[in-house]
Length: 475
Image 1: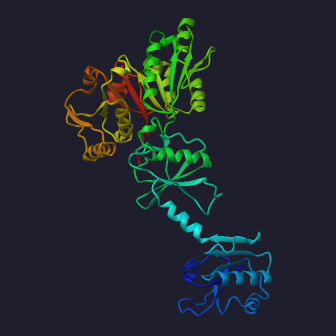
Image 2 (image 1 turned 120 degrees about the vertical axis):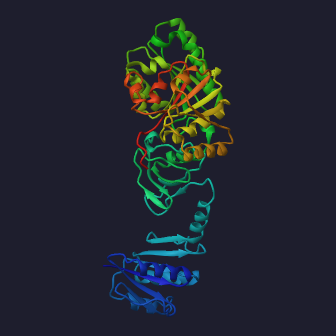
């Protein structure tokens, strides 16, 4: 049984004694010294009270005589008296741990490796600072106390809102818990982050500082939270005839966002003349990387993603569909922009097609980002040719709320047409689709399953923005 002496006086001490009285800690026994008798406090099996002037060295020695104490706590209002108590305790034992509440920085100049000062002014100012908006909250009394544990509130306009945990790359950091509606959620990959959630994140302090900024910032940081830079993958075996056009389209993304880089990876070199033309695009924020060997394509992409903090992969429709690359790219949890037969500069509308599930909530936030950046008309289309796919009120409310948050208009339309045929007939649109591992761009079974997203993915006419999602939406 460890014995603790508490020398107490004032409201803070009273609150502390009430706390230890109500919360028994196993193997701890308290001796509490008060100036005056307090009827609120009674002796029990683990707390014993004494009443005398604690500045009296004689009385302190009498209480401590013949006993070994693990720690002394000094919690007093009068700092001069607190210092006297500390000096008296040090006469009794020079190496026992002393925890002192310092209200006026009276203990700060004492050199004592066994003295632990609780600076009330610093604690209160730090706690008040934590309540300021847009300020990260760090764990103060657990872990290493170096900023490796942080709590972050998610604003409605955050790039993390309506994202599944599994779709967010977490390198050298982790979302350990979510607090929502005064409840603790231990998240899985399928857990969706919602506005006003408080995320408990753990990782290296420098990394968490960057993550905090990503969570709090708005659309100006696109393509966050997936990464920072843009990446064009060119396989000249497939993309030779349109390579220069694809580079110019990729530069459109670069021009819309500040402090970003475009990485151009060129593989399967089939023309040195074309390669020289591609190299001429290089400048401070555009890099051209060339692969002359026969590395596997997805291995190259993965290495570049890690090295250059890629958030958006730009790729041709033909390359995306080749050798099952579309399935492998999903594992990287990055945005995918598939170049279409219609060039990016011709796009006038961004279109979300409701495929009858909750995935729309997750992709709609990114849709507002991209529509605003490129000044596109934004449409939400609900196709209901047979009367079986009615749009629910919650989804309409969600989309309208985002429209108010971003101050950007959206048109919600109900159509009684075949969605595939109608989309094929449209011109100058960007299709915004959820991207899951179950999507299939080759098997004819998608038509029988009425997998609208997989069928829309096969339309080569329109550029497409794919947003990675997790299939399950249980939380």
